[in-house]
Image 1 (cartoon, rainbow, N blue to C red):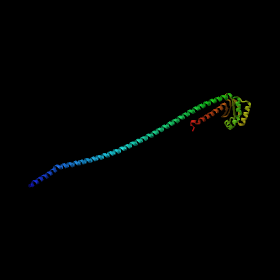
Image 2 (cartoon, rainbow, N blue to C red):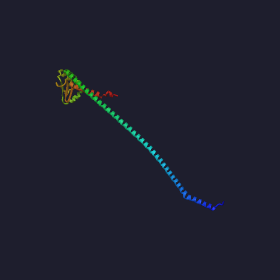
Image 3 (cartoon, rainbow, N blue to C red):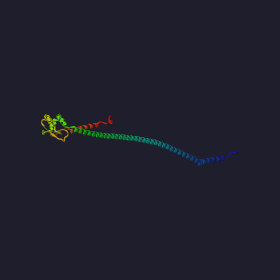
Image 4 (cartoon, helix red, strand yellow):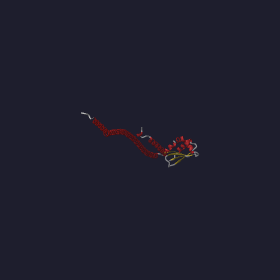
Length: 256
């Protein structure tokens, strides 16, 4: 069997032409399409990776911002709680201070009421006692009382002789007035004693039934009294001083 080389060469040429045509018009577009598809896939994968990275970055930023927001909220809540506590403490302190001031004011009011009641009570008692003593002395007093005062007059005038003389000035007349007339012996003894004590004055005696039991001296602008009324006025003054001193003492509840 002989080989037809022309046919072989022709078939080989046809085969090569077919390969070239397939490669040129079939495989190349397919390969280009595959390459383009791979490039598109690679681009999309890269885009997807970038999107994933961006999403992860956004998620991290969100988590950080959320954490910061939570921390800020916690700080704000803590600050608000602290401010509320401070304001509550301030209001409680103000309330306690106001209650304490009102309590002290009420105690001061009660103390003033107590002192006023005691003052009125003591004053009423003092007035009652004064009127009672005045009435008793008025009922019991007689000429003997005036005579007893006259006998002790020199002793009372001795410490104030200089003041009485100065008050008399140029007026040499001094008058002794009683509710009832003194007996002559008492008048003479009293005049002699006073003349020795105040020789610059002339002494005379007078009677005034409107005057309270006792004795008064009028010398110039000076007037001295030793009467029931003057003694009772002194008694009232001493009672008032005693009453004032007693009110000045602290109450038993305030003693420390």
